[in-house]
Image 1: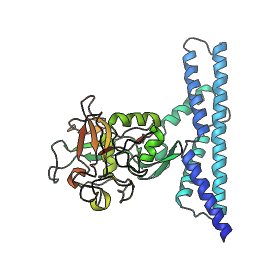
Image 2: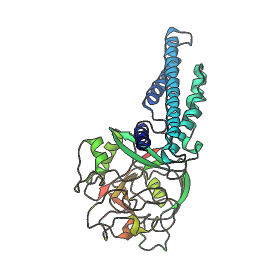
Image 3: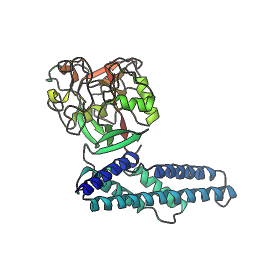
Length: 371
């Protein structure tokens, strides 16, 4: 019995390392050789503007394209083999089918098999260009029928960042005139988000900020507390280093609502740290109930910066809005531990100068699909 438990624990440890380091298609070798391959294809096209296909320069670059393609294909093959072996170890070790770790692994195997099936052993440059276009066009979360709230883990300097999937869709942004405590800048309008996106499960924590930025500006200290006392500009630097993004205001509200149309995305007392239960301080992220898409603290705890300039909404239906092209203030959303519940509604909008920072301001990040 002890031996079985030991094997199961070792499998769990191995699994956590695998998905922290190679979630979905983010295997380091795949990333490395995919990037090199794409760069050589771009260079090859550029060379042909001035040289014939049969020229020494073009021939030399074609060899580099073919070599980088072969290495990328090998990286996919090795990752597929590794995942398949791990899956067999799960089954032999008694890990249950349908468990989160098995589902994640099955999904990765499915993607690797799907993409790998497109990679023939020998492909001309034109065929490789078609493959690249296919990879750029394909929406893998939709291919795999990802459900709202599906989980994705990224790692940065040994620290995990957990994201949840928000599918493409349409919703009514803003609040109806009948909503209690409604503000005049919440004009209702139809918004369509043409692509799904991944948004962080929680607000960025102090542990995550420290790993990326090497400091901790927060007033309330604690590794699992949300980082605060950060300006919009500070968050942009964080995003630059991680290659994440701030959500647009539309993405934020869509994720917050998670299909709901009421003032809040659920029972606020169970979901939010506000003035009436926070003891006037932040609290560890993810300790209250999530919304329907497994997102925590969308109401309360700290205000969350969005990418948009603050401005008036369009009264017309819009697709993938990014806010005004300029302005003086940036949008913040969600309310904070010092706000009354009415100021933490799904539609409540805040705005502040992008250089402003205090203990009320934090953020969470998004990863767009196919970008």
